[in-house]
Length: 152
Image 1: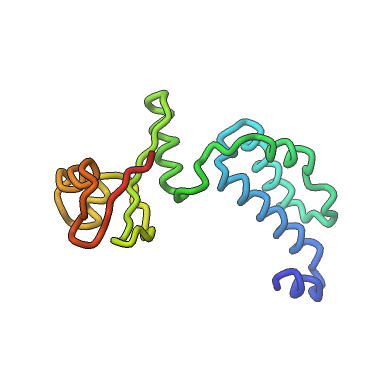
Image 2: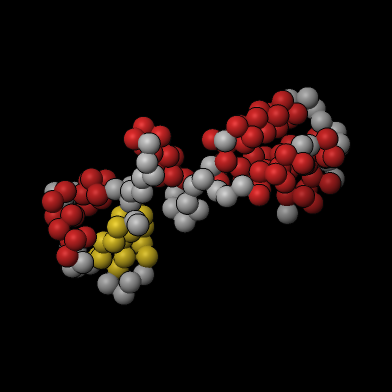
């Protein structure tokens, strides 16, 4: 839908190229590849090109982009970006990988939400941390409505 509206515009070239650059940058950010030197330099290059009123899509750094896509994602794509960022920052601080989070399921084992950790889950439900830990450890029904499962 967006591409059709861009085709009829006088500035279709620049808008279209900036949109494609945005999509590419978003993919790099979602995968966490901007933490690598190549990814960081690529994002800076895209920013520089978007400020230069680029008119040809072939001037985008496609070779660097294809190299970046070959790198395994740093972030776990199954959890929210905010939690990935927190885990990455903690793992840098302590020099070991960190995975935090609590999955919340209803009684029929339907996924509801992922909360950032046990303390945040306790705050989310307005209960004591020890109660959340106990229900995760014992795999029992929490508040007569939920199952809590740790992120592994």
